Image 1 (spheres, rainbow, N blue to C red):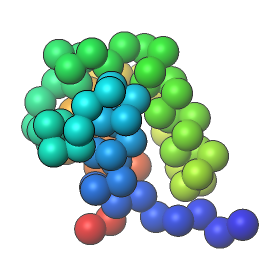
Image 2: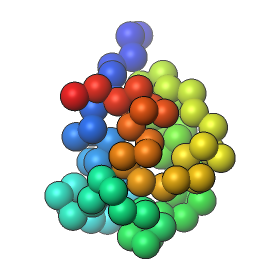
Image 3: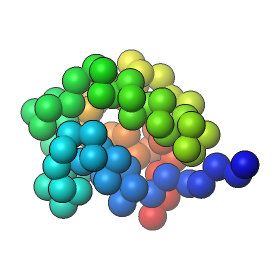
Length: 79
């Protein structure tokens, strides 16, 4: 199975889904901890991106700056 590239739209949708929010309510530049992101949810997101997109990223790298704009380059986000 070929991994599908992760887009910013999908990244935002994944985060919104795990937080119980609408994607448009998730800003790209805000600390996601302020929106309810915790370590368990972050680990779930990383596992889903590994499974669905073939992305290997360290939990610590994501936790260091929990914002979509910081994650995009780590995750190889396109478009």
